[in-house]
Amino acid sequence: MSLRTRIQLSITVLLAILLLIANITIYVMFKNASIKSEQELLQSTARHIIEELHKEGNGTTEEVLHTYLISDGMIRLIDRKGESDLNLTRENSYKKIKTSFQNDQFEDVLTFNGSKFIMVSTPIIHDNGSIVNLQIIQNADGMFSNLQDLKGVLIFTSFLVIGILCIAGWLLGRVITRPIHRFISTMKMIEEEESYQQIEITKSERDELNQLGMTFNSMMRKLEDSYLKQEQFVSDASHELKTPLTVISGYVSLLKRWGSTRPEVLKEAIDSIESESARMKFMTEQLIQLASAEKLGEFAKEPMDIVPIVSGTIERLRRTYKNEIAWTTDPKRIVAEIHEQSFIQLLVILLDNANKYSNDVIQVELQEHDGNVRLSVIDNGPGIPEEAQPYIFDRMYRVDKNRSRKTGGTGLGLFIAKRISERHGGSISLISKEGHGTTFIVSLPISEVQ
Image (cartoon, rainbow, N blue to C red; front, side, top):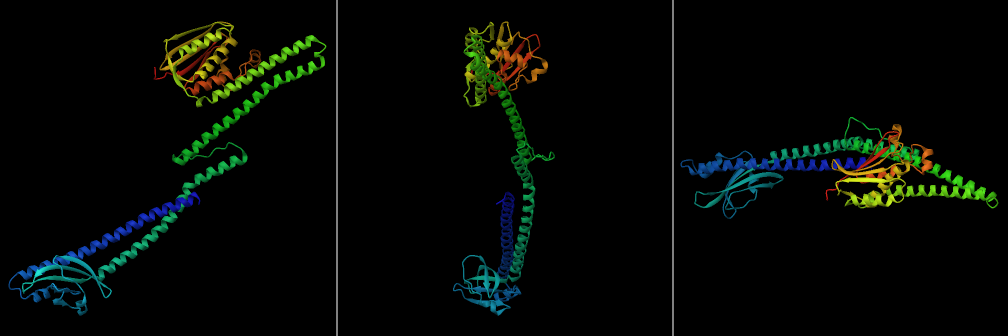
């Protein structure tokens, strides 16, 4: 069953049920009110009769009852045996209406020969001193005929309104499902053409369907951006791997021809193969680090003092770096919620970068700033050109490919650093001027647990 049909049926059935309940309630309330009104009129007549009977000089009981005799009804007295010794009516057939004696006042609706009658009964004292029921009975066919007419009108209007509801539900279903069909059409086109087409949004409306469309468009933009970056990454990685593989292949061919007879060729080939293999190994490690950075969100982060972590990492790297590392911290204890190994990876990337492109002391500063941990890595290298700075954290981006090839750069390190910073809820930025060095600044939230 289609969504439009479900909407139409749901609206029609729900409103039809409410309409039927309302109409039945109206009919029952009107019927009860009409009967109650007639009974109150008859009770009023009974009270007047009793008042007249209590007055002296108004004649016999029969004479008083004759005075109040209604045109289409009956007044009678019923004794304890259920027999009537006084029965006044203009329609003799009414005398056969059955009833009974009761000690208390009561009302009833009777059916006789297909007609409806309203009756009230009130105990009174007869002329002979016995207690009898004064019963007033009135034909109510006119009132019940009006009730039947009302029932017919309500039934007719119910079917009429239900028909209108069916049409309204169908139209409403079309209106509601029209944008959904547009979504489906666009999605099918995306599937068939393998494109990233977006759904047209009506800016004048801000309902849930428009929000769904905007969310879908946002998702498509992200998918397209991710696909383009993936293509660029595959292209760059293929290019980077192609070069060392070509060099290795060339030197392997050279070794086959001259390796056994010319020692200088053998040494040159082995050195070149070793160098290119190291480059390929480094790139593979960078790709593995990238995958780890992408999965950082799955790792548990814990509040911990990062001062000893930074200190220990710097001490280990000092033994292998060509440049000295100087660092300061203020205060002496700074707690942040981090994944320790990923945070160390971030610090190593920044220090490696500074060590590659600088020949002077590397400075590391750790401090609190506006409720954040601020980690700064400062080098005195050649700096980064201003036009390259907006792209420095992009995947596989390198400022100078020739210089990067000499230093072994792949363009992945700073991208990984950015991903790690973001997964920690922080950010990374840089301050650089060409010829005056570069400062990388990582900002992470300080943990509330100190």
